[in-house]
Amino acid sequence: MIRLYTGAHCIHSHRVRLALAEKGVEAERVLVDPDQPPAQLLEHNPYGDVPTLVDRDIALYEPSIVIEYLDERYPHPPLMPVDPINRAKARLVAYRMQRDWYALYEQIETGGRNRAQSARRALRESLTAAAELFEGQTYFLSDELTVMDVMVLPLLWRLPAVGVELPEAAAAIRDYAEQQFATDAFQASLTAEERLLRA
Image 1: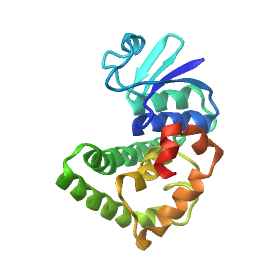
Image 2: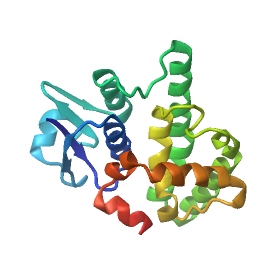
Image 3: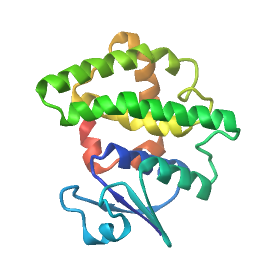
Image 4: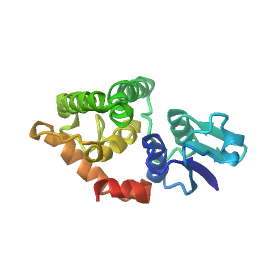
């Protein structure tokens, strides 16, 4: 069986857990304390961070690499578009989410009070400005679930817990998120600790 070393609250681990759940792939979850990574994890990943996925003779870390591996290893349902142009576009969108939204989320989580407050405001404004991208289709910028959804949904799940409330102008994002949060795959991707973020 695949083994996934995962953090209980880790947004990057959540991305991998969501990819596994969307593909219906069972994995043994090993919860890791980021301050005390177990020796077994360090044998597979010299950085001792999560997520780390072990599948037979291969150990992978860095969430984008792990998710692309899973998509190739378990091709149905696909998370990457089939043609090269749309695959490149999906990767670029995920990269921009990482650089823009995830970076602000990290500032909220780790920055001082003033920096975190500034990051909350910037994240709320940036998401609201992108709200129209969530309109008119079930998934984000696509008629099918893709890596873009796997990237954005763990972030949207955490917004209330970090004090980011989306305004009415971002109703399309809230509608999209609530629809996706209700799916079996998303629910299966959550840890007990993550469920408490919206309790």
